[in-house]
Image (cartoon, rainbow, N blue to C red):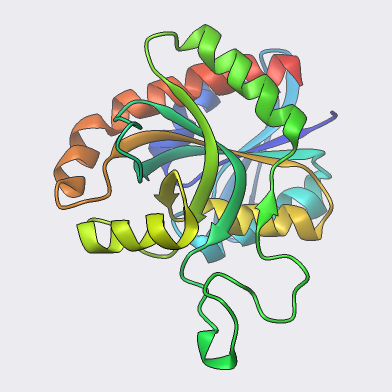
Length: 232
């Protein structure tokens, strides 16, 4: 792979990675700052997209158009949707769906994007396999899972909504950007991987857990991404 695009939604998610970079240039577009340079010897562009699906999709398209990235890694935090996935653990996407895409009034299943051939976006198997291997090496004190990531413009902190996401999508975690990045990558025919450290359990305790455990969760993703870029 040539240039790898690395997207985080919030400043906290990308600051540590930026500090590890040899920065060659910084440019601004669509109110986003794109840091181009080397991370652990690999050419990368690191950017904070901002929160939500629209920001994330715009960010991905800029990486494709302006930097011709050969792959996109989306790193950050998420809420767990499975009892065995605990705070601090990492989920790697095998695929991604937008849980708030709802055209059921036109006869489509929830999550299906009308008039698109694909609504479930599949991560590249090789990227997932290498990431899992690396994560188990650099984060031996946590568990690494591979499964479905669901995204929507909602912070999930309600048990009933959590149970609906599990029963409807069989998802492993929920967040606010990954599936839109996956869709943009799919439309541009480039591989993607979503990496999510669990910061909360996506239930009534989510707001408290998120504040307390976000920093630790990000630490795990930074370790993974820093080593992963060396191997892909």
